[in-house]
Length: 259
Figure 1: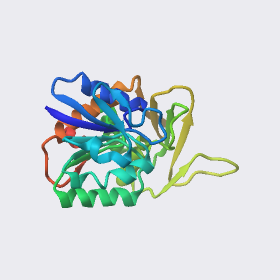
Figure 2: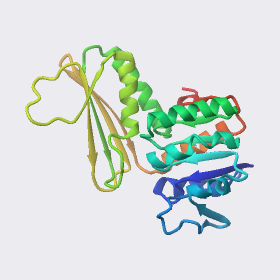
Figure 3: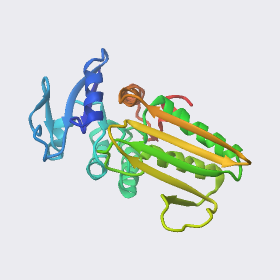
């Protein structure tokens, strides 16, 4: 049985992951963490599971094999570097975590001989989407590239981690250095750049489109999430994959999926 603790357990994604764990035959939800200001803090969030705050992180992590982080960037920055010393593996889904916090986490995972999976998106289709973006960018030399992402009106960060991972992979194979975010005024003719546009509206779960335009043709690749279950299912797959692994490394979801 895999004992799992979840940070951000009261959020939309966190609650979905917790419910999947509770309904799983090979996992047990042993701990949960929420923000101090939440009304559920230090109260029972699921049967037998108290929603602790970061001040009581040791209690939330007691007996856990894997910790899942779906918090906020500032909260994750305070948490992920402390987990490896507890001997607990991690599955990190929070995006926009400060780079220095990520670097420290990688160092701690290595130094403590634990393991982690870190991804901007855990949906199987999104990971294939990233791979296809990379392939198209490599094949379509000189084409203009635009990235458009749309999410619900409560999303805190922009652009999304999923969009920025697509950009990272495209830059890797094209060598394009300039990334701009939206346009206004009189920007003039575009140069060799990738432009990212963020839309926040309604209750959109997550839409991502990458446009390649050139040679009198346009190729669009799009991923549309219909339900948060697609992300939560990926978290469950990553939990099972990282459980028991102690190689001192931080892995990508592409490794979990053997892409």
